[in-house]
Image 1 (tube, rainbow, N blue to C red):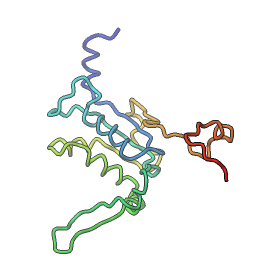
Image 2: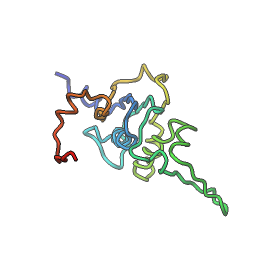
Image 3: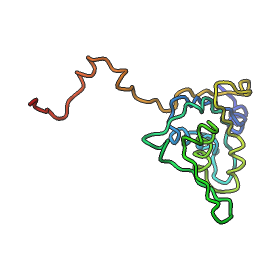
Image 4: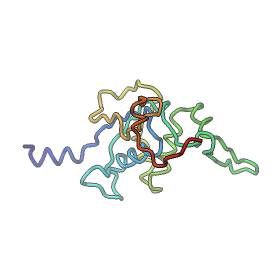
Length: 171
């Protein structure tokens, strides 16, 4: 059994989480990342204190958006000058920088206060498998929200055994 001192040290120590973003929906993954960055996974969480952990996300180039969001979601910013509104779709932003879509999702979900910048500095995003923080990782999260199987992955027997809600007569 661990002593009280070692439990206390483990509670206050900043841990390193590695998350694999391959085939993960950006918004659902961002919710998990925000909880870890804020420290809501720890028993000592307080909104005014920065007790969060480090998060390393790999394979951000393989992230997913639901529906037509790749084409319909628009990121806007303004230069401050007349006619200075800049717009870019999620698809173009992702081809330009594969980490930006997830970065903007996490940044938008964090509370808008003075701790936001400090928490975002503990988030490390990498488009591929490789990153230089392998020695620091204490927890690995491989598939935070598993997706269902695609229709092409089901066998014919499984398709026929699927319950039919409406019985359509053949003409």
